[in-house]
Length: 276
Image (cartoon, rainbow, N blue to C red; front, side):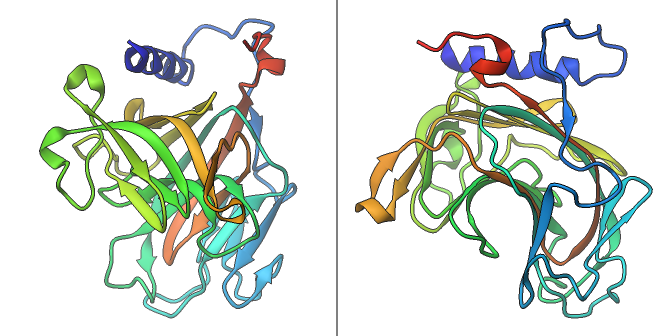
């Protein structure tokens, strides 16, 4: 029943994302930009070799209201990787953004699939692969759930894939089997079976609410979990809930564009809900 409820909530949010949907209620929180379409106000870069706030290679270009990654890099050249992060932390939210691939790929991932991602609930110091949860953006694998360095979640998987190195999400009401995913290192859970990515611009969404997470691509729920938690190495692996963190666009050696990056606050204080 809980799984079905999560799906209903997520799909209701997707409906609000479609053109021509009814106007939001006056007291409903609005989406606000994380990226203003002009510059990196409220954001900062963190790049290999260069660290925080330095981009001498011009990895990040802003044009026509979009972030263009690796515009100035030559095809097949060696590039630095990293991310563009928010300066502030965010808790319960509905995040949505659009992306499309460019043509170029670069070393050290030149022979691999085009790759990027959207980190959320980043905690701790900046690192090229930070302690975070990730919405994977990799060709044929968009919507995968990536748990980095101690994050764990309760989810549901296709029983046919439970012995695979990376199991595949399947909702409980479709026959999915309960599974605890994550832990040490970097852990991947594949998205709902199928290739849901389109040519050109794609619309991606992440909903985080009371420890539950939902990944959506072009209106389709591709991954879900609940009871998101973190094994804190500073406390001998003690489990604690993490309910907020920084958000970042991953930069990973593939030309890509991002636009309309915006967020809606789903916290109790903004929605008027009462916490029990």
